[in-house]
View 1: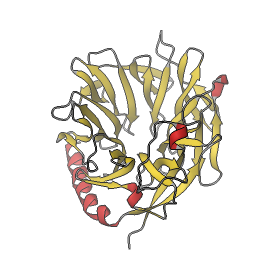
View 2 (view 1 turned 90 degrees about the vertical axis):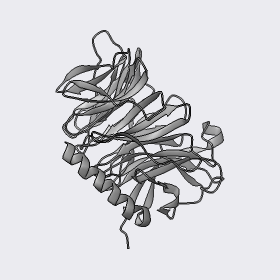
View 3 (view 1 turned 30 degrees about the horizontal axis):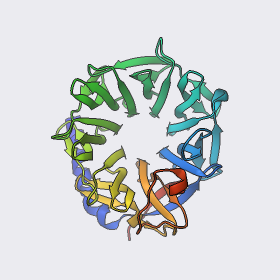
View 4 (view 1 turned 120 degrees about the vertical axis):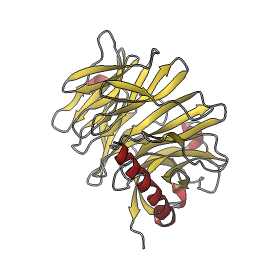
Length: 351
């Protein structure tokens, strides 16, 4: 594992040198479902995308599945609920997420052949959410107040770091899980493997952290928080937690996803508002609005939430005639900010 991590760091550095100068993207607007807003959460290696669409704020939002052939499909809300969200999709087309039921949110698995399956909860709990699924169908999430793993029709309590609460947000293809858990010092990012939950700590001077993703090399990305703001991090077994670069003046930046080739995506705020970003090294950050060719007027990419090993990025942004990447945009409410759409960004070959 140590050798793999060193190779990963070398690759991350090399990609930062090349991609920062050369990489551009072409964007496809995936649209939204009525009444017109969408938020994206994940994509697989086939370029299939999942998220939630409908109202930007409130009920009657439905999980969606998008692919190039057929466009955006409404997965609807199972079991008579009025809200659902899809958080992850694997290359087999299995989708996980959550829907609202009479006694709280419930985790679901959706498959083309079977439709929706309620994943259930831990004993004596009534709520659950499924956040990620790996290639072999293992699912990470939360039930009640504890992080859980669903595997082979069994739900496992992953425990905590000594506090009451934990959540599992990402699972890689070897079954390693990243998330956040309470400690006596605050909420900390964790990495779980071999039935052991490891506290990843925080960046120096911070009081809390949470992990959003783990790749197949066991590299973790997320956010560390303190009096100085919210900062993105990259964690490896060799170097521990290291800060990532932020856009100028940012007091909030978050790394949401990373692939197996060293690319990381997320968002960072600026004087003009929130912007979707990509990191090609720990010191190289790029506003995706500046490297998407032909980005239409009236579109500002405000967050990037997933990236696959082909370098395709799932992002979302504001769609409104009165906005541009050169002016301030706010996302405080649907009426003020306008609609949000999901976008698929595909790398263009360098010339």
